[in-house]
Image (cartoon, rainbow, N blue to C red; front, side, top):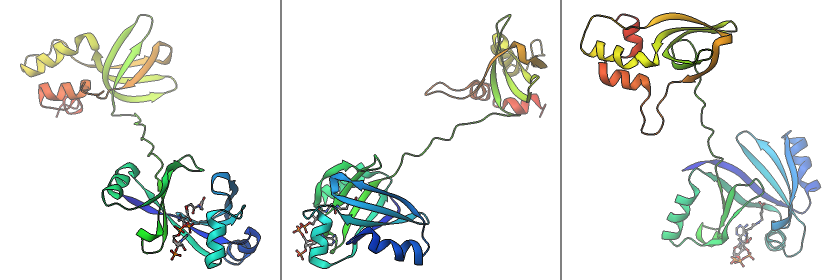
Length: 241
Ligand code: CMX
């Protein structure tokens, strides 16, 4: 659930006091500097591999950071953990009566953040920040992929296995979609081939679009339907295995 330490917040009297050590002596890159109005602080982030150091300078005498420095002097102010499923963790914290500081809110990066009170964490102010949503990998297709090919003039739909794709057109080993069921029924019944796939070159001018053949919700892909009915993959059947 905890992905990593996102950053460690360090309270400084002024960013100019803190930056020389971290940025010059330790040669850490400054990843960004900005003001967080809601927290009444100016911050500088320094890159530390997958994590960061955040220097915090108060912009008002009544800020959390100003109070911290007045009481304890500059130093480590909070630890921020990145959390994969923040709502689930918040539920667990509530069940265990861990006191939050205020309500979860949207932080400077547009991600949900929440502070846990130091009295519940052994004296460390802990901030939780929601992980960025993972980017869904976009499936690609290439030679060997099962595809649906839409042709124009005249309009036709082909289904099969892509053998080659280049600027001149597409080499497809497949069958007219209208004959798909007959072909599959023939394989199911182990009949002689009356309708069957062929290798065809489709010039680019006739191509309308190529769709990757894949399931959508409860709807199986054509290749899955083929496998369900014949017990073999379309690639196996085409390769004569
Ligand atoms: N780390 C550890 N202990 C801390 C602390 C900190 N950062 N800040 C306060 N404490 C301690 C206090 O010293 C106090 O201890 P004692 O009871 O032993 O004296 C105790 O926590 C409780 O203090 P409090 O009187 O209830 O509250 P404070 O006014 O000191 O505020 C807190 C504490 C956590 C509620 C306040 O700092 C807060 O709201 N923090 C969340 C927001 C924040 O920190 N923003 C700045 C960073 C923003 C950013 O990164 O962008």
